[in-house]
Length: 271
Picture 1 (cartoon, rainbow, N blue to C red):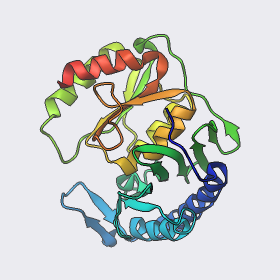
Picture 2: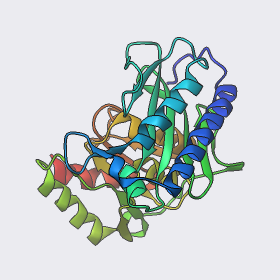
Picture 3: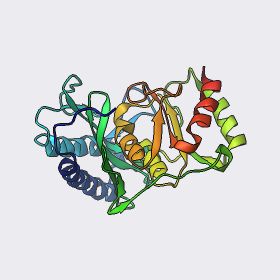
Picture 4: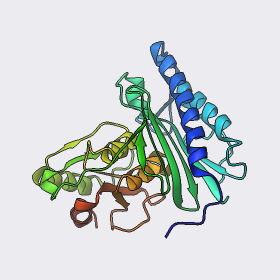
């Protein structure tokens, strides 16, 4: 059941697209002459950030500030006061795939979503390397640039190509994760690890991947992709098959046709 929405979602989504493209152009320009000496670490040697992440986030926050005046912000780099109690909340990852960006691997993007409570109502993901802008709003379908997209419908898991993200700071569930990978290696077409959760989910929405899972994942990484996938006909859940994926730190995103089997495989290894 959808929440009552009091704002013009199509109009706001088009405005968010412009903001995402503006941030994306900045990121592309900075990559041309990126100074690796300006890389920083966020609490762990593998958790990297740069001035590009922070400046891109400032561009996005500035562009969104007046679109929904009473909205709060949850952002990866914390360049704006973080508020989650407002009726509406922006969830922003200015540069999803930072490690790829820093190594000049061209798989990274800007991800922006608007949530009403715990329900995402619009999302925009801009992959500046391919100039692909994925976007959706509740009830409006899912789009890549000007083309409507739809997720795939494999008949069974053995026909599915699955994406994931590797853990890099929390290894308590390392063996469980390896068990899931083994199960998927034996029961799917294959596994891919691209390095950007937002792109992974959008590629499920576009039918390039058939499913995606990850644990220890943040809301701002997945929020935009989730609404895009749902509007493309896909399904999103946590590892138990419930709806606690946005802030629950684990996610399974896939075509409807394989979701139950996907959840069963992951949960049998995890719990």
